[in-house]
Each structure stands twice: as C-alpha cells, then as structure tokens.
Image (cartoon, rainbow over all chains, first blue to last red; front, side, top):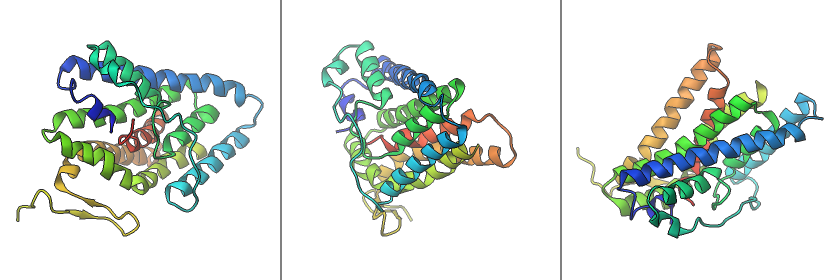
Length: 185
Length: 72
C-alpha cells in the first residue's frame, strides 16, 4: 500500500493535500538540516578528499546494489506511518507528510535516499542541504499530486506500488550524473 | 492508431523487464518528466559552469525521493 492510497479517502479535499505537502517539506528540510548539523561534527576532523571518498565509495556500493550486482539489506526503519493520522483534517495529513518527508519511517526499496543522506552528512553546506530537502519533498509531493489528479485510483496505485519499483535501475542511472557532480565539485 | 489502454506501450531492456501500460505512463509521467527536465537543466548548468551547486543537490534528492514513491 502506498502513501497516496492511504490518503485516498481524504486526499480529494484540498486542505488535506496542502497539509500533506506542507508536512513533506517541513519533515524533509528539517531532516536535511539535522544531517548537516550531525555531519558538521563527523566531518570536522576529515580532510575534504577523505569526506568525498567516503561518499563516493558508499555511492558506488549502493549503486551496484541497485543494479543487482551485489545484494544486502538496507538500513531502514520499515515502519508504516499510522493510518489514523489521515482522519484529522489538515494536521493529520501534515503529520503524515512530515513523517514521510523525513524518509526515515518508511519501507525503502532503493538505496538512493541513503546516498543523498550520506552526501549531506559529509559534503553539504546549509543552503545545499536546504535544496536537497526541498528536492526530496518535491518528489514525494509530485507522487501524491499525480495520484490525486488521476481518476483511476486503483490503476494509479498499481503504477506506484508495482510498476515504479521495477524502474529502480532507471532511477539509479538518472542518479549517477548528480552524485558524480556532488562528489567531484 | 489509438493505443488500447491495457496494451503495453513501452518495453525497456530485459534486465528491467518492465511493461508499462498507458495508465501507469499517465500517472508516472509528471514525476519522470520533472526529473528529466531537472536533470537536463542541471547538466546544461554544469556544462556552462552556471547556476548554484544547490541545484545539483535538489536534482539528486528529486531522483531519490521519486524512486521511493511506491512505498510508505
């Protein structure tokens, strides 16, 4: 079951969608800034080249996993956001969105968010973390807005739940240029 | 010729083994289009050495975030 489907009973109400999206941005940006805060301590003793090498090495391993070359379980919370929060107007979806925005209370079929988190810890400045948080929230918001816009909810759910995870390698390929830039720049 | 809604319209390589019907294409199109546009803009910005590096962070997170869309 995906988040869009969990919101489907109330997602047609504009306030619920806006609450969810606001929550996504709050959760995502707060998490990104928290990672920079933690990272500023972790990376302090490290030369920039070592920090870049750690991110590059981790990215390489996780990308190999995405392409099925190697296999190992990802570190993840793997806990669903409680469904009851969707029953509370605006603040329920906002809380739901905030938890989704952190990316830390979810099942993660891909290691790409882990790479972004590691890159933020070791490489990002405050404004760069802000941009990363906004990008993550925007991506998740596009998913729920696409779901809300379609009339065929069951097919949309199938698209996100069944078809999208099969595109893992496409997303991994699209992820390569930006992560190379972040490590090299 | 009009494509039947349930007929697969896109085949990627065997390794991807994906048959995306038109409904899937419609639902995923906004996110995938956004990613491709952002990626193209980012590559153009790097090529011409223009734009803040924050954009690259946004694109990386955009791809990572959308790849999670199938899960909670």
